[in-house]
Image (cartoon, rainbow, N blue to C red; front, side):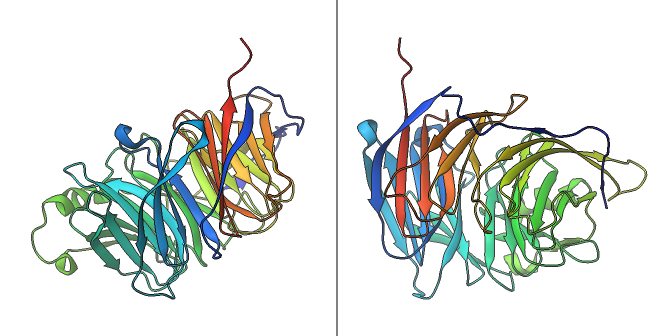
Length: 371
C-alpha cells in the first residue's frame, strides 16, 4: 500500500473565480423525470466532436450541440427491460470506424449500440452486479473497460464481444469499483478506484498477447481464455472515504472522494516491490457542497481544465495545469438546484454540459473575450 509522502504540503486552489473564461447558460432541457447519471462527448471520432450521449433510467439518448445553444436530438435507445437504470455511457467504435455508444447500469449488462443504424451490436453479460463506469481506450477505441459493484474491473473488445481480462482477486478491490480510466499514452495501464477507499493501478503488459488475440478470435466469445489479473502494480490510500472518480493527468492522477475537493497526486512506484510506493499529493481543487458520492468530473480533450458539479446544482471549472490551481469559472443559475451527477466538457472546453438528478441537461458556452 502506498504511503502518503510527508514534507511538501499540497497547493490548494483559491475559490475566487479568475474570470479567465466566462460561460453563459445557453440551453436547458428536461429529458424526463428519472435522474440522469452520465453525459459524455464523443472524443473518438473528429466528425462527431459536437455529439454527446446521456443515460437515465432505461434510456440512452444521443444529441448534437449546434450553434446558438441549440441541442438537437439525434437518436434514442430504450432498453427492453423497463427496470434497467443506466449509470454510465461511453463512446467507442468498431474496427471499421462505426461509432458505438456503450452503456451499463443496474442490471450488470453492457449494451453496445451501433449509432450508425441504431441497433444493438452486442450485449455483454459477465459482471455479477451493477456497472458503475465504462471507459474507452483512446488509442484503441474498440477496447473498453468496465467497473462494477461486483468488485471487479473487466476489459472487453467491442468488435468481437470478448471479455479479455478481469482485474480482481487477491490484490483486487474489496468493495464496489466506482471508476476506472485508461492511461492516455501507456496502453498497458489502467487505474480504478472505489468504495474500499483505494486507487489501484494495474498493468496489462504481460497479458497483452490476449488483447491482440481478442481481435482475431473467430470462435465463440465464451470460449476465449479470459485471464484474471489479480495484483495491481500500485495501491494508494489518498482518500479516507469512497473514491468515486479517477482520471489520469499524464502520469499523475486526479481523484475525488466525498470531501469537497479533487486531489492531484503522483504515484511513485518501487520497481522491486509491486504495490508498494508513495503517493505525493501535489494540488487540491476545492469543490464546495460536493460531499455526496457518485458525482463525476470531466475534462476537455487536452486536459487543460476540469468541470465538476455539486449537490446544489453549481459547477466549478478548474484550470488543471497551473500552480497554484486557478478557478476558471463558477457556474450557477437560480433554477439549477438539483445535484449534478456528471459534467461533459467539449473537445476545446468551450461548451460544458451537466446532467442532473432531476432529469435536466444544462448547456453553458464560453463567451468570446472582449477584443
